[in-house]
Image 1 (cartoon, rainbow, N blue to C red):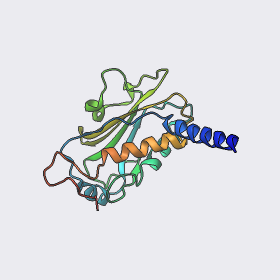
Image 2: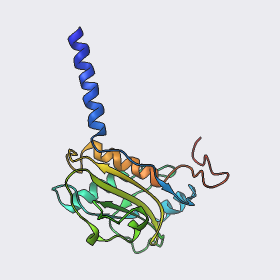
Image 3: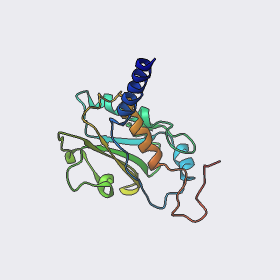
Length: 186
């Protein structure tokens, strides 16, 4: 019986550590975001999503599919769909940029102007920045760190971090706006 308890405790700790392997999601930056804007964005079709960098051995296309799949429906409010394919009929100024392994000096405030030339693959944790952009202006952003042990783009811990980041850049409320403290909290 004692051995069973030790094994159960060991498995629980291993599961907890595995869930943390992808690293923490930092406190997000939220500007004048109005949670009801998600309805406008959803009505325009899939949110154009630019994925820059690749911390894994696999193809960029596989990473992009995993990122957009993990993000789809993870936001507060009306579920959003994400796509790396830009729809010419979608006239929304909103888009998402997910940047893996940014060079020094490329922080959340500049991620909406980031391009593929601003990638530096480094050993150790990979810094991930996700931003909701309106044109080239940052609306909201969040950063996280991926531990080097993350298995790949289909790793449940990696997908969990992306879902948390999506929730952070599309929050259900914005305490910076008076009277908007519980838009989707019912």
